[in-house]
Image (cartoon, rainbow, N blue to C red; front, side):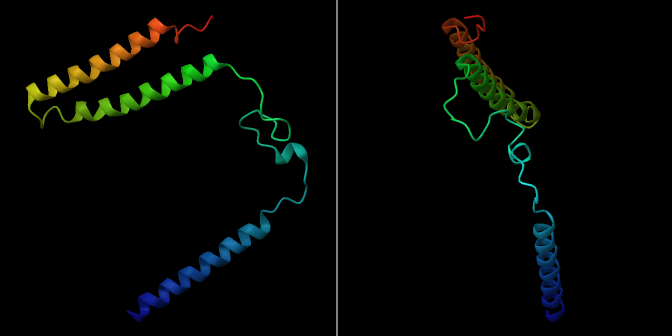
Length: 117
């Protein structure tokens, strides 16, 4: 028990030394505006955040997110086909996919998928 406690203490000390060294060595010495700005998003963080963006792009992104989550729900349904009752699985899968298709038809009918508006 004492050996385990000593080992845990040594691991803790080594990890603290590594974290302190990493924080000391990773400080940026040059405060350049280009190097300090985030390059992933493309927005300038020092200007106004109220810039216009395409609402159509936002709608397509939300639709993609919804259908991506629904795909993540369909994949386990395929995996449990061997272990579940076939009639119950078929009814559940049919209802779920029908709800997805009705939602897709509604979005299509409302014009959310038309990019050229």
